[in-house]
Length: 166
Image 1 (tube, rainbow, N blue to C red):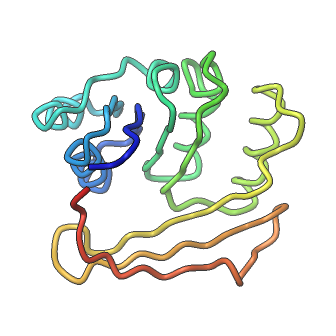
Image 2: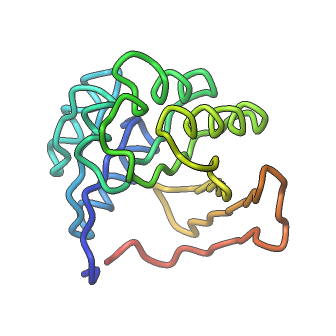
């Protein structure tokens, strides 16, 4: 098991989100989830994910908030929409976005988050992850990194995932 257990919020409980959250629960983390399709939330509750009422509710109960939604517009809605993450009183959360989004829009959202959350500076470092073949063998992942809004290729990483056990 992990030395530290986290309260993790996860928004987007479709195919990818299901795989992520199921593994996080197995690793001993407390997970609260939200999805526009309540069927996905109900399915996730079978393996221990608690149901959040909105992205704001999820963020308010989480040390780490993870997003895995279908588009740049969906990310913007989850963060800035009514009852979005930016409405949460928990501005200390780490926000991780696994969604496939438009880089320029992600940079703009980081600036908006800075203002909405009263941060001194916008997030300096943004990392993006892509995990392939979650349901089978030979799972791989990659990470890209942006520092001060520019790609930092020396920080890009590839991962061969051998196990998802704690």
